[in-house]
Structures are given as structure tokens and as C-alpha cells.
Length: 250
Image (tube, rainbow, N blue to C red; front, side):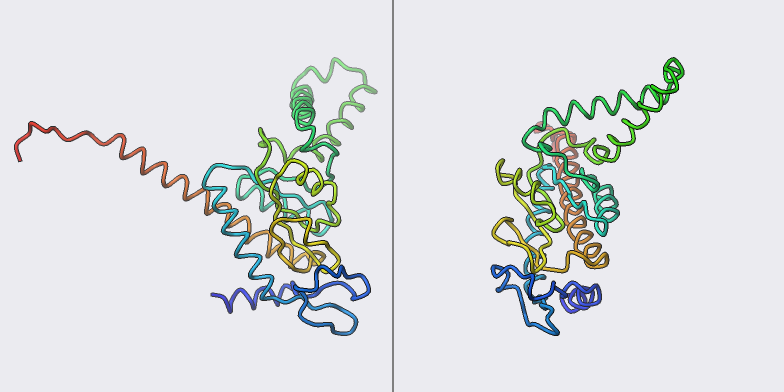
């Protein structure tokens, strides 16, 4: 199992870091070597970070907590959306809106506006507006849909965030730290590992690397949710079972 995972990680290019001139010295413990001015990430450290993150994510998912997946760079967008939808968690893959966490009430009100715009567009009401107003409403809808669609299911603050490239998502990391929300992050050699709670050292620019890591984490969330559902079903069946009659003869 471990050797298969190592092979998959290497094939995805997870061990390729940035040019050595761009490195963050705090990443030294996660770097295996330097080849042709490129830092090579220690895959053993990647696996260690992955296993810790999987255990944590499965645990909080089994308790019904939310995990927000964040990755707005081009290479991460599709994977973030597909993985989040597969494990039933909210996501942000287009743009981080300032105050997404620290001003969550306002974000929720914008989601209400998005739903209102959808209602207008899907009904005859849209025809009661002028052509210019219809165009304006459609522009507003497209912009809000891109920014907010992934957060429809986020009816409360998440307990954890999965982040691809915390350097790119520095505002998301800052808000999470301010609110004490745990962060699991795929971090390359130019990142500061001290800013996240559970770092997973690896290539955060390769689509294959991002896809592999994020899917493994999404699997852990799905497993945690399935475990919770099984336990709930067992408890329900135990409650519904008829009580034994102490007066019945054996």
C-alpha cells in the first residue's frame, strides 16, 4: 500500500519544488535535495503530512463538522470543485472574497441574493424588466454564481479548511488563523509551513499533483461521513428493536 502511494506521488511530480532561489528557509526540513537549481521535496514527509491530515479530516467529518476546500489558482479550480462535490463539502475555486469567514453573516446574505436572482431568471418576472436591466441582472448573477456557488451548503463556519498553495491564498489563511479554524495545506518550497496547522509538502503547481493530494483528502472526508452514517444507523436500529418482555418464559 505504502509503495503504491509512493509510486503515485512520484508519477504525479509531487516531489518537484520551486527553483532554489525562491525557497522559504522554513521548508528546509521537508527538502530532500537540490537538483539543477530545483529543490526536491522529501516524499516521506509528503506521506507523513498526508496521513496526519487524513486521520484528522476523517475524524472531524465523522462528527458532522464542515471542511471548506479552497484553491483559486487555475491548476486547482476543477479538482477543488469536483472533490468538494464528491464528498459533500463547500468550496471556493474562483476568488476568495474578503470577509468570507470573518464577515460570514454578510456572505450568507449575498447567497440569499444569489437565490433571489435565480428565482427571477427562472420565472416570467425577468420579462417585466427592461433589456438593460435584464442584462445588468444577468451580469450580477454570473459574477455571484462564480464567487458563491460553492458555498451554498456552508450554513455555518467550517472547522477546517483544505488549502492549495497558502502563499496564493494568504487572505484565506489569515482569516482562518484569526478565527482559530484549522488549516490543512498543500505547500510548495516557497511557502511558510508555520502559517498552517497540517502542512503537506508537495508540488502545488502541477495539476496531477494537486489532483492526487486533494482527492486523497476528499476520500478521507467521505470515509468519515460514511462511518458516522453507519454508526447512526446502528444506533437507530438498536433503539427501534423491541424490548424483551421479562415475563415471557424462556
